Image (cartoon, rainbow, N blue to C red):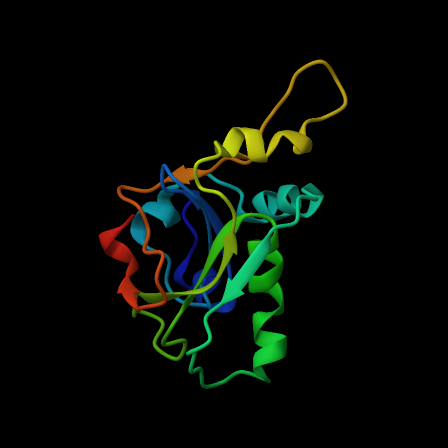
Length: 162
């Protein structure tokens, strides 16, 4: 289900990934999707709807050295990234939003929890009320990355990770 260039430019897709260690949220800021993401058959909107159903709340940490142009205020800017981190996602955004082809991203907000605890244990409570138990990972069709995403707040090229 490849998206047209017009779709990619006109939509700020929120994409959920799994890097083998942590849950990842990426806001594309209306930029071009990395090819692997554009070629996937994942329904990005359905992914986010599943996260809205998830009620686990984690403490989180924001990027306190963030410099962004074209924002309406940092409090408003951080709101959705905070929301995603409260639910256990490391939340990233595109750095140069005026350049649709640039693939530079940066960690905006991250959850704080004991990484020694298995994610399937953390995410038990998303299970439906029937007999079967599902984790957040299995409920959402997550694309797996080629390597672990950065956990610091430095800029990076997303193509090195997907």
